[in-house]
Image (cartoon, rainbow, N blue to C red; front, side, top):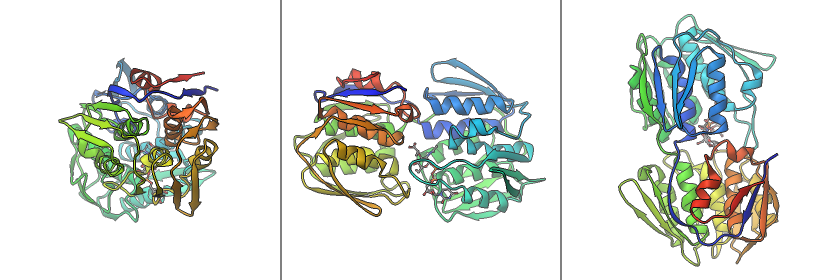
Length: 416
Ligand code: EPZ
């Protein structure tokens, strides 16, 4: 199994370009099942999760071709299977996002119940609530979910929680349903807007993405399109923290500043300098970042996917910080690993209280999930000695060319 070896590095300096967003590419790949003509996706990150989703599409009968780095051509005119195999589903829970498109295209979908993961049980009750509201019958047997609908009829659907995945799956199940569907308390993440823009390019009629009410007027057919995936705001945030934690100076290119407002605000509260340009963000770290408090919330609140990375910074900030995780029930798996590196953190329910220390020390640690792994890399960059991080397949799921990007900035990170 690969491991990352992270050496104490000098302050990171330089420019880097961010990859396309994993959490936009995955729903858009699933939505490509809805098109009946050629689809070209650009700026698709080369990630394990993207590879798995492409395998799922191919299994279902779509033609999937990698045209060039980051450019994928898909044609789903002849999809002929409505059932995804457990082996594929179990490798990535986001493959459940094919359920909505299959229900729309074939009137049925059968997938295995997505597994939970380190950060929580990851239920799908809101996805199923939306499918039922549109007229689908749902049955669960032997760990499989079956959804059948002779026809899908638009309905008003309230999401009890603004779930990103449920909003995406319901949008894809409603885009060709009879009449109008309204999703209330919809997720407002930029990835929802990206998906809506893609579906509208295919011929969909979706309004309100990015707000809490999304209106979808069903259409008869969806064609093809060319679409470029938005930059990954969580990767942007990760490198913003990398500049802060190493007291460096990094310019991140080709970003959409409005997507990373919470991270800009919070880094400024630590005293770091953050300069926003047209589509670049420059972060200049300082010697003694101040302790700050963060509370994760659905967008436009502080993103849960940035909580572990900010916690690494708080470990070496001056004073007492508090991180409150409201989105997932178990997203503090990185705390024990950071404590092995000398961090002073106490967990009290959904809150972590972090006393800043002068420095961290290297230690063998384990990545428990994608963003926890990223936090350990950041901590390793400022820890004496070599930090050995195992289970880095988690990191490979969501960060493209991480070693190369850090090396370009002077970061000493290599795969062993
Ligand atoms: C997406 O997961 C992202 N994944 C996650 O990113 C991200 O952390 C999450 O949104 C929140 O922003 C992808 O987009 C592929 P949710 P998703 O449904 O859709 C509860 C990463 O690191 N919920 O918004 O699964 C759920 O239990 C990953 O890139 C229900 O109760 O997130 C959780 O507490 C990690 N019932 C909360 O909503 C449901 O039917 C947020 O989940 C669905 C969700």
